[in-house]
Image 1: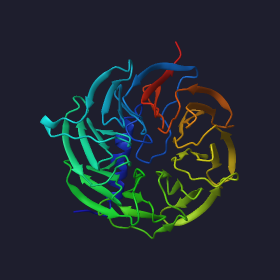
Image 2: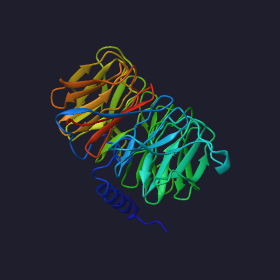
Image 3: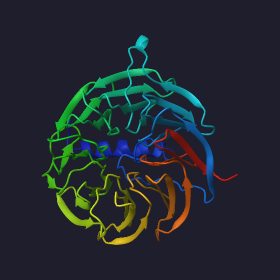
Image 4: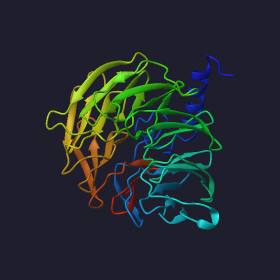
Length: 376
């Protein structure tokens, strides 16, 4: 039976799990709150340590846990790579003998308790053993999955293009689903205090009770469709929309605190924001990365790239790391937005960085997985 203490229980379980994995990157944006902030900085001097070539593009962020990189590809494979060397440990792919079929993977893998969770473009959500790459179970949503998974208690949550946010038990059985009318649920669900959030083509933020899958508060009009993931700090969340705005919302009250609209051209924010104590950092299809003051929404700085920025920025220490469709990974000063360094990695980067084990890992649309670490 659920009690009034359930939100506290969920928060305690989330914080306990996060502390165990303090040096890892087990989820799309690093933690259950989807903040995109690393627990530890990267070395000042960086270089490319290794590259791994898949047969097709990498759109999703990697997960990094216990010295292993887990990354999905459009080539219909989930790869486990050694973080130190880039050598494959195993691949999970279509295997008729085992009854396994894997579609192109656009989503970022999520890792918990020795299991990998990831959805594919055929609508199948996979649970795979981290040590062996063997299938544990699958769940069919019937539509493409680009959302990554998050966890609450013993349940796993993710969105699907069938317009639903799903909550499954640890053995892959449906606990509940919540429908967002009009289109796909693309964002990864952030989880805080027994609540999660769903948004999509209905241009509405829904605050849901994680235990029941029902709306726990009034909805919020976002003024635009959403493909990004919310980032949460305390009772506030931050989200970009396809109508070219970034919003700060007091989610417990359903109150919009501020809206930011890029001053140049009104282009969509597909990237998810990184949220620190003072700043909200987000990439736009207007070819810029913006840092906004978290309290006011006023622009602190902006940085121009050569093409659109669908890669979601990551903050590690005093640096911002973000990819661009111009093929570069940019290292920016967090306080000023000035360029510290750039790495030319390919022709197109849509994936977001992952930071773990003193390294940064990011994929390109040419299928290259790059590991960047301390310079020798």
